[in-house]
Length: 145
Image 1 (cartoon, rainbow, N blue to C red):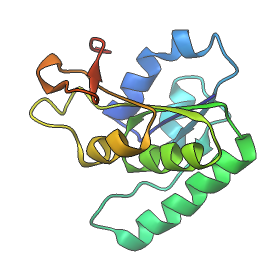
Image 2 (cartoon, rainbow, N blue to C red):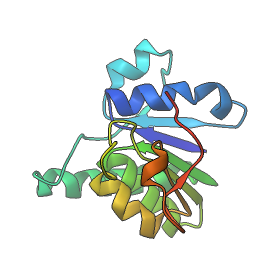
Image 3 (cartoon, one colour):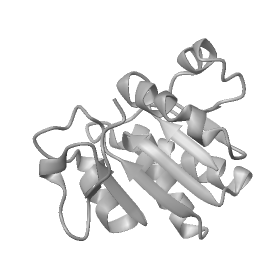
Image 4 (tube, rainbow, N blue to C red):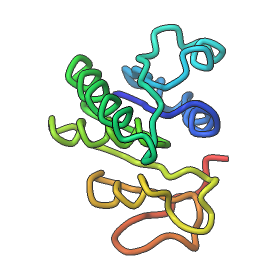
């Protein structure tokens, strides 16, 4: 399993899922190696942080995300966001991995841009806000926080 999140709140939400994830052979990837180390994740794969306003950096992140996915060849890719997580979800889907996107709790008015993209790419897309759930996606199973 590959669990991916950008630094900050996305990473904190992923770490709240860590006790469940660690029942499996899980590898972590993030944009901030220092934050990973603070949580005792010494071998986290590091992705460049990116967003829609930095297209060259986003392209680099997509390439590195694909490389990480190809090197780990996970059966499952899970992400709590943001763009680096989406790129891993996309690469995971391309190699046949099951994929799960959990949109950040910070997105209470609408899904994030990557959340909206993930509705069409990920096997399962979840929101942490019941009023944002739709059929077929995103689903709602409760909040991480």
